[in-house]
Length: 430
Image (cartoon, rainbow, N blue to C red):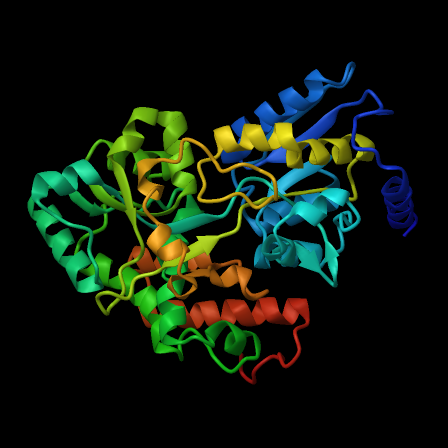
């Protein structure tokens, strides 16, 4: 309690005296813990920030391999192992860790006035804002090898049936139709998550009804269909046989060199591929998860990760000065050159440059509000922590789509009970 009050008092004082120009900083380490994929960007930001502040030293440390998983984050927050600043997801996953009350309130920062309101909403709890965006809005769907498509005379599929026909022709040519990489567990859920636009088109009230406990994945045909797509690909033999042993980089390499045709993926994969083999980006295309009805495709969008401040950290003045730098002109310029996203989320930040070919022709979706939606985790506080393991079991054939949906419904129920959502109570026999 004393620690919490001290942090709150320090924040209150700085909200009055904050100048944002680096004056009065203490020479001390700034320790940032980040998922591996964001380390290069953060190091560029830290180097530029520290260069103008004599005597300041800073380090960016990649987190443990499972940094994206909630249990690891929660453990490190409870033991002071998340440094002075860390990156993590916005939306439902953020709400789960903040429910323990371990983050510093950043509502009062002047920079928040320039942050897109849609982003502020997904890093807020109880009317308070806890995060600052790192990067811009992004998209999930199917990455594909354009050169292989041209070689086989294929076109981007407008329906799921056409997608499956493309996969049959790809398999007949001796290539892998669809890559899966379960050694990077989070990648297992991408097809299910990126299918949410199709779910919302068939069941427009699904997000609201899920929170109110009027809907479930197993009981909503459109939501069950997301799991069924994975099962259909597996039963057809379209997934790579070594999917249990390969990770993200393996999947991207196979896609880039034409061994594989498709990889369900968030566009974060393009950033990783840029670091692996930037020339390969010219061969990669993108399309949304194909719908069952031709001509109805749309995008599922993601918010970027956020920078959060743990109450267990030190050097709060340095942390806040760094956040101000990230959201300022110099930080925005570094992000624009480093992160290839569809649009920034901080006002006055210029458009991202060097956007890869895969993301250059999405305006027909982005400019029409009826042809895109945010992923479910940004529309509700509910994302079950076991989804990736459920999807791995589904992709390996351990369970079928119906059982996957039922397991995820139970996972969501546990999360709702943890969050104390109205109307949720243990079901009898559950």
